Image (cartoon, rainbow, N blue to C red; front, side):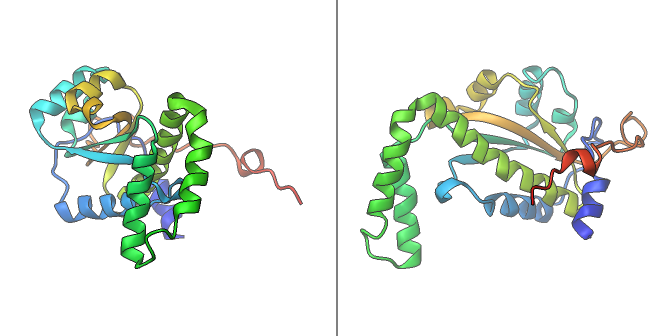
Length: 210
C-alpha cells in the first residue's frame, strides 16, 4: 500500500519554495523514468533537465507565466522523436543485440516488420505515437517523485514550438511533449495544498467485464 499512500500525498503543486532537491533524489526519479516500458522498447524520447535559472525564466515566459517553473529545483522536459525511421529503429535494436550478446541479424525480421507497419502511417502519427511513449515515462517519474517525497507539477500548459526553440530540439529531431517540475511545496502560499484530492469513485472509474 506504500505507493497508494504516496500517490494520495502528491498533488499538482501550484507554488514551490525554491528549495533544491538533492541530486540522489533527482537521479532516482530519472532512473525510474528510464526504466519505463515503451512500444517495442524503442524509447523514442529524451529528458532534458533544466536547472539554469535564466533558461527557466525563458521557459516560464512561454508557459503562461507558471511560477513553478522558476521556483522549482529542476524542470524536466520530456521530448519525443518527431518521427520514426529505419535508421533510428535499427540503432535501438543494434544496441539491444550488442548488450544481449545476440547474433547481428537476430532482430532483422522484427525490425523490417515494425518499419513496414510504421512507415506508411506518416510523420504526424509517428510524432503522436512517440509522445505517448514519453507520457508513460512521465507517469513513472511522477510516481517516483512521490515515493521520494519530492513535489511535482505535471504541465501541458506551454507553447511546444517555443520550448523546442529554447532547447534546440528541432535540430535533434525532437518535439517537447510534457513538462514536469520538481521541488518542494510552499505550504503557506499554495492554495491547493490542503484541499481534498478528488477522483471518480471506483464504481464509475472501473468497469469489470467477466
